[in-house]
Amino acid sequence: LRANLITKIENLQDCRHLQELDLYDNQIEQIEGLEGLPLTKLDLSFNSIRHISGLDSLTSLKDLYLCRNKIRVVCGLEKLEKLELLELGNNRIREIPEDAFTSQLANLKSLFLGRNKLTTVDAFPLFEQLEVFSLQANRLTELASLKLPATMKELYLSENGLTQLESATFLRTPHLQILDVASNQLKTITGIE
Image (cartoon, rainbow, N blue to C red; front, side):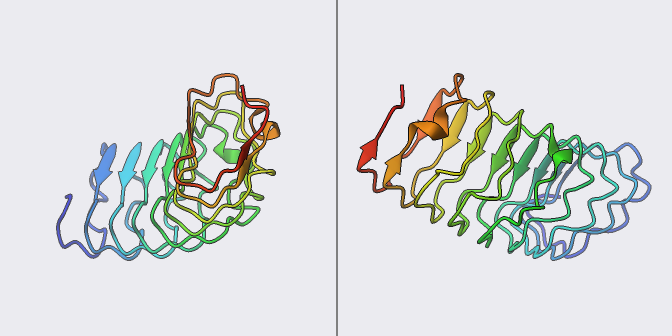
Protein backbone atom coordinates (compact mmCIF):
# COMPACT_ATOMS: atom_id res chain seq x y z
CA LEU A 1 0.00 0.00 0.00
CA ARG A 2 3.09 2.18 -0.27
CA ALA A 3 2.99 5.36 -2.37
CA ASN A 4 -0.72 5.61 -3.04
CA LEU A 5 -3.41 8.21 -2.37
CA ILE A 6 -4.88 6.58 0.74
CA THR A 7 -6.42 9.13 3.11
CA LYS A 8 -7.92 6.84 5.75
CA ILE A 9 -6.90 3.54 7.35
CA GLU A 10 -9.98 1.35 7.14
CA ASN A 11 -11.40 -2.10 6.34
CA LEU A 12 -8.56 -4.05 7.95
CA GLN A 13 -10.62 -5.65 10.73
CA ASP A 14 -10.64 -9.06 8.99
CA CYS A 15 -6.84 -9.14 8.62
CA ARG A 16 -6.37 -10.97 11.92
CA HIS A 17 -2.92 -12.29 10.98
CA LEU A 18 -1.47 -9.09 9.53
CA GLN A 19 1.95 -8.46 11.09
CA GLU A 20 3.42 -5.73 8.88
CA LEU A 21 1.57 -2.76 7.44
CA ASP A 22 3.35 -0.34 5.10
CA LEU A 23 1.38 2.83 4.38
CA TYR A 24 4.46 4.92 3.58
CA ASP A 25 3.87 7.93 1.31
CA ASN A 26 0.11 8.34 1.34
CA GLN A 27 -2.18 11.14 2.48
CA ILE A 28 -3.19 9.81 5.91
CA GLU A 29 -3.90 12.46 8.55
CA GLN A 30 -5.02 10.29 11.46
CA ILE A 31 -3.94 6.94 12.91
CA GLU A 32 -7.11 4.86 13.16
CA GLY A 33 -8.66 1.55 12.13
CA LEU A 34 -5.87 -0.62 13.55
CA GLU A 35 -7.70 -2.04 16.56
CA GLY A 36 -7.16 -5.75 17.15
CA LEU A 37 -4.43 -6.21 14.55
CA PRO A 38 -1.34 -8.22 15.63
CA LEU A 39 1.07 -5.80 13.94
CA THR A 40 4.76 -5.99 14.75
CA LYS A 41 5.77 -3.35 12.17
CA LEU A 42 3.88 -0.22 11.13
CA ASP A 43 5.22 2.33 8.64
CA LEU A 44 3.23 5.55 8.35
CA SER A 45 6.13 7.69 7.18
CA PHE A 46 5.61 10.44 4.60
CA ASN A 47 1.98 11.17 5.46
CA SER A 48 0.22 14.15 7.07
CA ILE A 49 -0.21 12.84 10.61
CA ARG A 50 -0.27 15.55 13.28
CA HIS A 51 -0.95 13.50 16.45
CA ILE A 52 0.24 10.12 17.68
CA SER A 53 -2.90 8.28 18.71
CA GLY A 54 -4.84 5.11 17.93
CA LEU A 55 -1.97 2.79 18.82
CA ASP A 56 -3.06 1.53 22.24
CA SER A 57 -4.28 -1.86 20.99
CA LEU A 58 -1.05 -2.61 19.09
CA THR A 59 0.61 -4.34 22.03
CA SER A 60 2.81 -6.53 19.77
CA LEU A 61 4.27 -3.60 17.85
CA LYS A 62 8.09 -3.63 17.69
CA ASP A 63 8.87 -1.16 14.88
CA LEU A 64 7.02 2.14 14.41
CA TYR A 65 7.96 4.51 11.59
CA LEU A 66 6.40 7.99 11.66
CA CYS A 67 9.07 10.05 9.93
CA ARG A 68 8.23 12.96 7.65
CA ASN A 69 4.83 13.78 9.09
CA LYS A 70 3.57 16.89 10.89
CA ILE A 71 3.90 15.65 14.46
CA ARG A 72 4.63 18.34 17.07
CA VAL A 73 4.17 16.44 20.34
CA VAL A 74 5.47 13.00 21.32
CA CYS A 75 2.68 11.15 23.14
CA GLY A 76 0.44 8.10 22.80
CA LEU A 77 3.22 5.53 23.16
CA GLU A 78 2.44 4.33 26.69
CA LYS A 79 0.97 0.94 25.72
CA LEU A 80 3.71 -0.04 23.26
CA GLU A 81 5.74 -2.09 25.73
CA LYS A 82 7.40 -4.26 23.04
CA LEU A 83 8.54 -1.31 20.94
CA GLU A 84 12.18 -1.65 19.88
CA LEU A 85 12.44 0.93 17.08
CA LEU A 86 10.83 4.37 16.99
CA GLU A 87 11.40 6.64 13.99
CA LEU A 88 10.14 10.21 14.48
CA GLY A 89 12.62 12.00 12.25
CA ASN A 90 11.71 14.94 10.06
CA ASN A 91 8.65 16.13 11.96
CA ARG A 92 7.94 19.38 13.77
CA ILE A 93 8.95 18.35 17.29
CA ARG A 94 10.41 21.24 19.30
CA GLU A 95 10.52 19.66 22.74
CA ILE A 96 9.99 16.34 24.44
CA PRO A 97 7.55 16.43 27.38
CA GLU A 98 8.83 14.72 30.52
CA ASP A 99 6.13 12.04 30.33
CA ALA A 100 6.56 11.33 26.59
CA PHE A 101 8.85 8.35 27.06
CA THR A 102 7.55 6.25 29.90
CA SER A 103 9.21 3.34 31.65
CA GLN A 104 7.01 1.03 29.55
CA LEU A 105 9.38 1.61 26.62
CA ALA A 106 12.06 -0.44 28.34
CA ASN A 107 12.78 -2.49 25.18
CA LEU A 108 13.55 0.50 22.96
CA LYS A 109 16.79 -0.14 21.05
CA SER A 110 16.66 2.48 18.27
CA LEU A 111 15.32 6.03 18.56
CA PHE A 112 15.42 8.42 15.63
CA LEU A 113 14.60 12.09 16.23
CA GLY A 114 16.73 13.72 13.55
CA ARG A 115 15.56 16.69 11.49
CA ASN A 116 13.23 18.14 14.09
CA LYS A 117 13.61 21.37 16.03
CA LEU A 118 14.83 20.10 19.39
CA THR A 119 16.89 22.54 21.44
CA THR A 120 17.35 20.42 24.57
CA VAL A 121 17.66 16.80 25.67
CA ASP A 122 16.61 17.39 29.27
CA ALA A 123 13.49 15.21 29.23
CA PHE A 124 15.04 12.01 27.88
CA PRO A 125 15.03 9.15 30.37
CA LEU A 126 17.80 6.61 30.42
CA PHE A 127 16.72 3.86 28.01
CA GLU A 128 18.71 0.90 29.33
CA GLN A 129 18.53 -1.06 26.04
CA LEU A 130 19.12 1.82 23.60
CA GLU A 131 21.79 1.05 21.01
CA VAL A 132 21.13 3.61 18.25
CA PHE A 133 20.17 7.23 18.95
CA SER A 134 19.83 9.84 16.24
CA LEU A 135 19.50 13.53 17.05
CA GLN A 136 21.12 14.95 13.91
CA ALA A 137 19.92 18.17 12.29
CA ASN A 138 18.21 19.66 15.33
CA ARG A 139 19.09 22.81 17.25
CA LEU A 140 21.10 21.33 20.11
CA THR A 141 23.90 23.44 21.57
CA GLU A 142 24.89 21.24 24.54
CA LEU A 143 24.50 17.69 25.80
CA ALA A 144 25.26 18.04 29.50
CA SER A 145 21.98 16.44 30.61
CA LEU A 146 21.91 13.62 28.03
CA LYS A 147 21.85 10.19 29.70
CA LEU A 148 23.35 7.41 27.58
CA PRO A 149 23.19 3.74 28.55
CA ALA A 150 26.06 1.25 28.47
CA THR A 151 24.39 -0.46 25.49
CA MET A 152 24.85 2.58 23.21
CA LYS A 153 26.60 1.67 19.93
CA GLU A 154 25.69 4.50 17.56
CA LEU A 155 25.10 8.17 18.37
CA TYR A 156 24.31 10.66 15.61
CA LEU A 157 24.63 14.34 16.53
CA SER A 158 25.66 15.94 13.23
CA GLU A 159 24.25 19.26 11.99
CA ASN A 160 23.46 20.81 15.36
CA GLY A 161 25.06 23.78 17.10
CA LEU A 162 27.28 21.87 19.53
CA THR A 163 30.36 23.80 20.64
CA GLN A 164 31.88 21.17 22.95
CA LEU A 165 31.68 17.53 23.92
CA GLU A 166 32.15 16.64 27.55
CA SER A 167 33.43 13.33 28.84
CA ALA A 168 30.57 13.06 31.36
CA THR A 169 28.17 12.46 28.47
CA PHE A 170 30.07 9.34 27.42
CA LEU A 171 31.04 7.84 30.79
CA ARG A 172 28.71 4.85 30.49
CA THR A 173 29.23 4.04 26.80
CA PRO A 174 31.98 1.40 26.51
CA HIS A 175 30.36 -0.13 23.39
CA LEU A 176 30.06 3.12 21.42
CA GLN A 177 31.25 2.40 17.87
CA ILE A 178 29.91 5.38 15.91
CA LEU A 179 29.90 8.99 17.12
CA ASP A 180 28.88 11.36 14.34
CA VAL A 181 29.38 15.03 15.25
CA ALA A 182 30.00 16.43 11.75
CA SER A 183 28.85 19.94 10.85
CA ASN A 184 28.64 21.37 14.35
CA GLN A 185 30.60 24.24 15.88
CA LEU A 186 32.89 22.15 18.05
CA LYS A 187 35.77 23.98 19.65
CA THR A 188 36.72 21.49 22.36
CA ILE A 189 36.48 17.77 22.96
CA THR A 190 37.50 16.76 26.46
CA GLY A 191 38.09 13.38 28.04
CA ILE A 192 36.75 11.16 25.26
CA GLU A 193 38.83 8.04 24.77
